[in-house]
Length: 98
Image 1 (tube, rainbow, N blue to C red):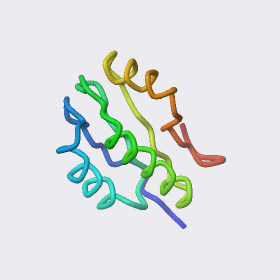
Image 2 (cartoon, rainbow, N blue to C red):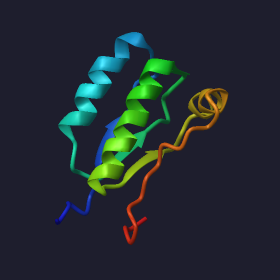
Image 3 (spheres, helix red, strand yellow):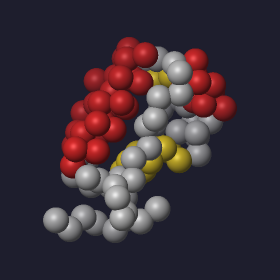
Image 4 (cartoon, rainbow, N blue to C red):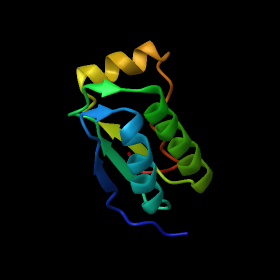
């Protein structure tokens, strides 16, 4: 299976709350099967439902064997991820390019 070398890039919105969950899910699922880079530099708030969307995407990308990375996490994103117990979101397939 060949995948594009350049990952698709998605800029996460500043507020990842209940209203952002469904649009985020739809955007990520539209990119399924492609390497994905999430820009978290603007995130000021990460809610539980959007974290579930991100974790679900990670599981799907793992099953598909395609990389998923969070780039430039803001301090707000990192702090709130830590409050949720620092779940792993990044995924690089075995032998994949980093």
